[in-house]
Image 1 (cartoon, rainbow, N blue to C red):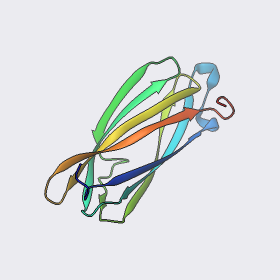
Image 2: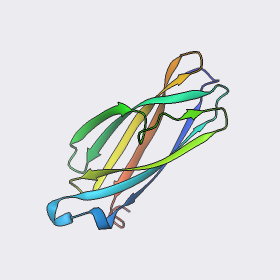
Image 3: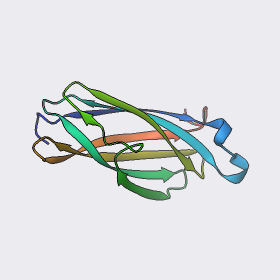
Image 4: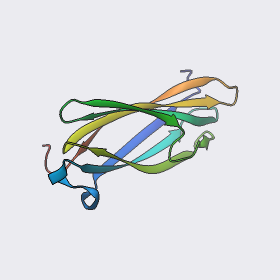
Amino acid sequence: MEPNQKIDVNVESRYVEDQSFPEQNRYAFAYTITIRNSGERAARLVRRHWEITDGQGRMQEVDGEGVVGEQPYLRPGEAFRYTSGVILETPVGSMEGSYRMVDDDQEEFDADVPPFTLALPHTLH
C-alpha cells in the first residue's frame, strides 16, 4: 500500500445477552467498527472479507460486497462507523479480516482489520 493510501480500523465488540441462548450454544456478539481514511487519497470500500473463529478453533470465512449494505466513500480525514453482529456456538471467539478499497484512480488495496476478541463478560482475564 502506498503511503498516501492509509485506512485505520478500530473495533469495539460486546456480548448481546438478549439475543443469546447459551443452552442452545448460541452466543450473539455485536461489533462496532470505525474506518478512517488517514491517507491522502479518497477511497471507496467495495468488499469485505472476514475470518471468524470460535472457541473450538472452527473457522468460517465470509466475503461480501460493502458493509451493512453500503459501499462508503471516504475522503481524506473522513470516517465511517457501523455496527454489525455475529453468532458463535461458543462463548469466546475472534474475528479478523480486511476491506478491499478502491481509490479514485481505480487502484485497489486492502485495509486490514486486526484480530479482535468476542467473549462473554468475565470469561477472559
